[in-house]
Picture 1 (cartoon, rainbow, N blue to C red):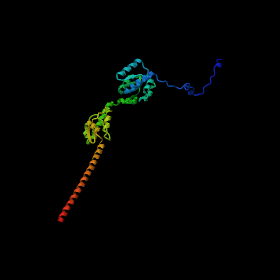
Picture 2: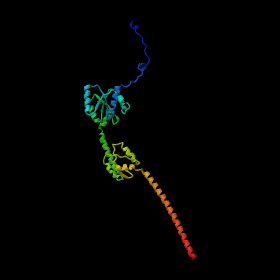
Picture 3: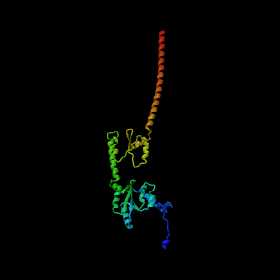
Picture 4: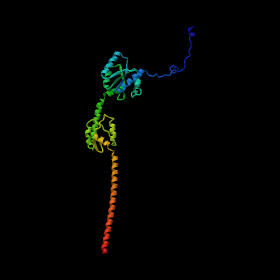
Length: 291
């Protein structure tokens, strides 16, 4: 009797994706919660001021163990941050960190530091197996874990800059030895930089030097002369050499024309005097002949 009373439901022949009830209800993106906005703005400021940003996958861990790991990182200058995925997405959307969006889709943790001390961080990760290093951002580049490990073996950036400067100073010495610029040899004994230009536009260079206080102008070479900074500043107030040459040429041409006019006047006057003297001489000779 029970079998007879069972309802017979026709089988749905549509594909499963068509029979899903969620298709008929379009997903409407909800506006972010104000609290997530506040946390996103806070995290964005921390990311922009950080020298090293590392993304970790966080496995389940007791709160006490997490606090101990937080304190261990804090003593070495690293800060363990816990933000929701929504706050992380709001923080990195529209910034240079937007390529790290995939790391905000699971249970992740952030470790921030003002200095990119990757070697110390890798040593500390061995003491916190609950956190798995995924990637990091340093020097405005996203690096994988193996790239971070390679970067930890590279010497410090300050050491590399010192080596580069010493190589450049050696190259400068070799370049100016035996040339007309050899008098500028003292400027190759320290950490110096060169600024070259095809045209001696000193006025523009002095304006630009006010916007780069990290570079201090020492001296310059122009028109085959080495000038101090004060001499360069004075030279920037002098009119352009082409303008001065034009003025000189105009003065010379004016002097030449006045000299030519004066010479022509004297030549005419001399011719008149000679003609008058010749007439007087002829008159005297005629008088003698008549006598």
